[in-house]
Length: 495
Ligand code: AHR
Image (cartoon, helix red, strand yellow):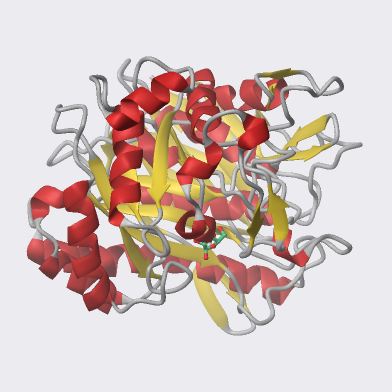
């Protein structure tokens, strides 16, 4: 038996572009994300690298067209003093990473290392400034150091450290989780702090281009968004963040592979909750900003489970199964469909931490199911959103129901239409009838699924889960019928 779902593509009333920055990533000094993940050191003789950054990682991330990369945190950002990470590596101080495992941080990966790596990756850096334990002058200096072309104390210092031209970094976070690890502030107090920091983070590029992002709400803290929207002057803020993880229960997060059916359902429910969050936070923003000039920036999202057995609990290393592919497909559909307000988002985190797209083990690297969803969805980057209406069958467990199918659609600059569909139901296939509004030709169809829901890619079976070509599509005039298998992601391309 299959569920029955209908999707109708609607005419575009007001053109909305799906910003490529919705497909952003996040690299924190946490566990094995930066060290051992991206960076293995300039002197490494075993793992092929460019300036210490793994070549296999560079190639994989280029395949995703990653549009931006957030760094150095997370919670770490509000303890990070950027001047510790510049100049000759031998002279850089060793500090303790208090948030994540209490390990020694030797600062061998600092500002130059990160920004040069972004150039290698062809991605835009998103720097998270230290507001929690830093100083206004320190953050103002960082902006001058990386962005000022002329002669100044900070640009002179940059030149002394070997970089003549500025990097012109546009995206700047003014603190992180100010309500928690960023200082346990109230929304009212943070807005005042924000105004001060943002004022002195001058736009040294003189292009009017600094894109300042305020530390945003924790999930359903609507008061936080309301206060920021009310109190922050528009000329000082381009984006307001939001963090939401697909977590079952912070005290009992459950295993990353051997989760129960009930835990799977609860994870999906938490992933779907993103839709409500986006709509409710957006409604508040609409009150103060009806023209949608301030973006909602979901700069941390993804699944969060217990760490893998026998790994450091502070390193947040978890495996990535088809459940993660479901979170990714569903969440990105939500973001696409709200692209009028969401202009940027960052999956947490790129390598070896939380819902990673890449896992590494010594000289081996693998692409997780989440990687493949992002690769399949890259066709939506900078494409025009096609609004749609969906009537989904329910996925029901123990008397609770959530929609089984999610979808989003866009038209790229060559006129090709892409429709991404996700069926999160782990047992029931879905017959999806799509009304395309006009006659189309199928160009290609790709599928991501696996034999078992709990399957994952491992170092000795790195390609167990990869996209394949999808055949269960029938197209008649302007109607398409798609047979979506259980726990599957499909991307259709139509001309
Ligand atoms: O992504 C891991 C942590 O989650 C980040 O450091 C923090 O911002 C959030 O609480």
